[in-house]
Length: 100
Figure 1 (spheres, rainbow, N blue to C red):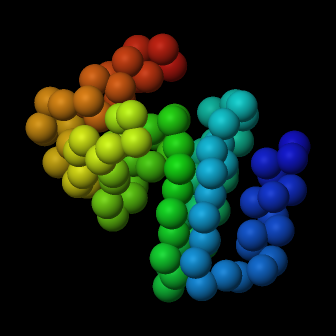
Figure 2 (figure 1 turned 90 degrees about the horizontal axis):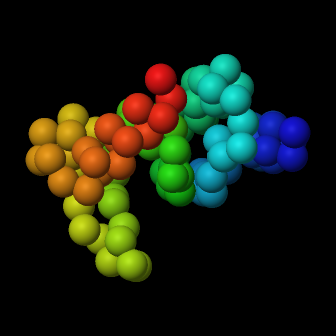
């Protein structure tokens, strides 16, 4: 519930730069889909930084940076990172298995 309130506040502020830290953590997949759709609308015309462990949240990002121990280990789009068969792909596949 707190996440939904924070998300609504972000919508009302209409900031030029939007930072979302774990916006979809601890919510069900249906609510995540609704928030993700809202995030995609919010991103239009602004810089958006999304910090997430749930990779489905960032799947549509223009650029994804994979951090490991504070260092950037991989970067690219979702499709590029899946094709590279690196850390991102491993995490994405593991999360996909957990969800099914």
